Amino acid sequence: MLSNGTKLTAEVRKFSPPLLLDNDNRPLPDSGRDLALLRVRDGVYPAITLAKRDSQIGDPVHILGFPGVVLSHELLNKSAALEASVTNGAVSGFKQDQIGQGVIQSDAPAAHGNSGGPAVTDDATVVGVMTFISLSSSGSEVQGFNFLIPAKDVAKFLEGTEVTKPGESAFNPVWGAGIEALLDGHYSSAVAKFQEANKLLPGLTDVKRLLTEAEDKVKNPPPRPFPWAWATLGVTLLSLGAYGGMWGRRWWKNRFRVQPTQVIALIERGLNPVMLDVRTKTDYETSPLKLPGAVRLDPESAETANLNLEPAQLIVAYCTSPEEATSARVGNVLRARGFKNVRILKGGLGGWTNARLPVEAKSSLPSIGLEIYKNLSLGDIERRRFRAGEVIFREGDDPRGEAYVIHAGTVEIKRRLDGAERTLNRLGEGQLFGHMALFRKGPRSASAIAASDTELLVIRDERLEWLMRNRPQLTIEVLKELSNLVVATDKERAEASAVR
Image: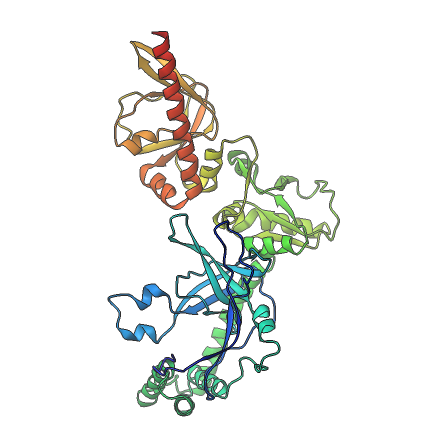
């Protein structure tokens, strides 16, 4: 069905079945590329060209299709079946299916009904065809992990068929010329081109919409530029100078910066960049996280430190300073020393963790601590210090909406049992405590005492709830901890009963 409501009878000319699995999760023998070539009656139709180059990590992706949730929405009229929905994202990986066929992973949202829809990039070429989405164990859709058949596999599927020039159509140049004329402000020319496109294929929704817009611009033209030509030229030159300077400064500032996803692409290409941790001494000592395999370089010794690296080695420096100021300074020093291939990680350590890329702990941290640090920005979280023996909170206290992570030191959890205070647990760096009172919405069930000089990170109730809802791995680690606590408590009760 075209967007003008025309229904076309289609004849299947070539078919490759989708990948199907049997009850033992093994591919069925006739599983294929999940593509079909359909023949409709001769005519002039819009067409999309297949991309010539292979996709790269981070390339923009726009998925066009007719998801069932939109088509069946009770609040939408029948026009929802005529106009495609568009979702946006990027290429996030390259995988293989169960029979070894390549697929492109994208975080662009998709749903049942999107299958077979084209995924286009910013130059309006097809980079892939939607083939399957991801489902949870309960059968619900998991967004962020959807998969495309690469354009090169579509081209291979078309080999030997009557389709020799995919994407070519008499409609396309007319339609494209109309859009260019509209964007350039040549409204009469745009009207003429859109009317020509409408004659080629009458009633298409997008053609009617832009034709109406162009006709309205002809009847009610936007205000003319200031009529004095020389004044206009002067203002234009002034503006160009200002914007040119602004964009020039921005380009100059970002010319050495790389996004986290670009670093992953460099690694996948076998360039093996050296990740250089150039955080200030204070920032380095107060954060337990670092990038996997990172080499530490104190920024104060960048001019003289022996790096044992070849001058041509690709180096990516990262820090936690605002606008990567420390990385930029160290990068200039290293380039002056002869290291010409130095890059700066945009966003620093925070940008890396926000991209959900792996990190590792400088010291031995429990799993729950590692997940918490990955999702906290230490610069904007409250810290509290306690001397050895100081009470953090007492059994029966109001929790005041606070949980804690031990940043440094040791904390003992104590409770009064049979008239005497007993030590239930001794917690170290990276461990979370005080959160159970928040879950129960009740008073503290035990006391917490600083066993040594201790520094705590304070996590407010609303922030902990947000992390639990949006960071599944942290939720899993908290559940593991609570499960271990239940088992330990049951064991302790059993042993106590046996003694009695």
